[in-house]
Length: 157
Image 1 (tube, rainbow, N blue to C red):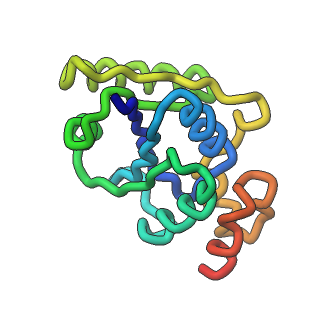
Image 2 (tube, rainbow, N blue to C red):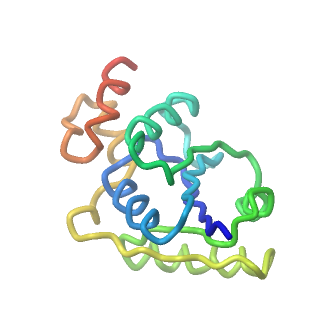
Image 3 (cartoon, one colour):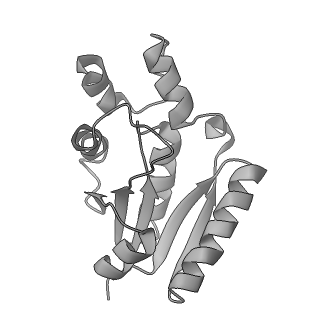
């Protein structure tokens, strides 16, 4: 039986921290769905279709990674895909508190769901998509924080 997981987020844009979590999850699971969700609290810089292309480009050699977009509850897309594992990255204590609450809510809505927390490696703790978006808007150097494969997409946009 295939063991699948879902890594939900905005990935706007994909960061090296995201890549680290995806790569680590793909060592544990047969399929890792990188699931681009809708978050009305986070206005997007890049359109979803471009984000999908960026992520697919960064993981073109990892056949375990599948990129999808969804506009429903994460528990619902998990049910639709027959996925019982949600992957989440934790950078700090406030991330943990938020993610723990979300995990409990998801498990209440679907008792088959388990959330797997990956702690961020020290070199990725300060990286967030929010900060990268700010760097992009202000013409800052993003090269140390994002995979090289997505730079051409960002430069064209």
